[in-house]
Image (cartoon, rainbow, N blue to C red; front, side):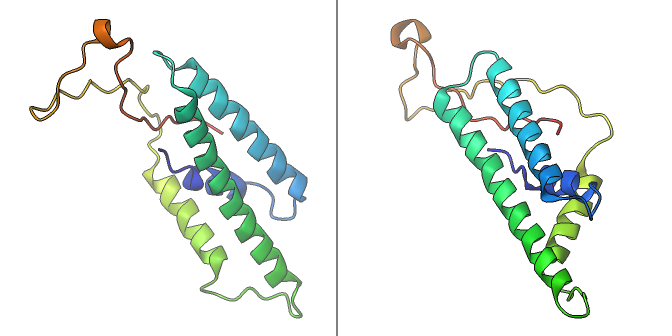
Length: 144
């Protein structure tokens, strides 16, 4: 399962800080659409449970970023408008910086990992006998 928080945090950090919440919501919707399109295009196709797991992971990242945005808004609306250091806004900025530093300029295309060799303590699964062999979970990437 992918960690979508750095991607979402970086995308939100790039928005105008004075932009209304609607711009954040539009960005989240574009991320959802891009993720679903990418998950549906994987060959061989992912199971619905794998797709749901990835969607929930994205939604958790969205909730975390929105929570941090709400915290920053509350702090900014306090008398004096000062933002205290050490709050969740700092975590947001650190994640954004970390994600920027960790993301290569041009990522190579994703390929499906090689199948895991069968272990001696488990019987091997023959695709012809069982229908479809289980696939290891993958973490797709998407560009928001």
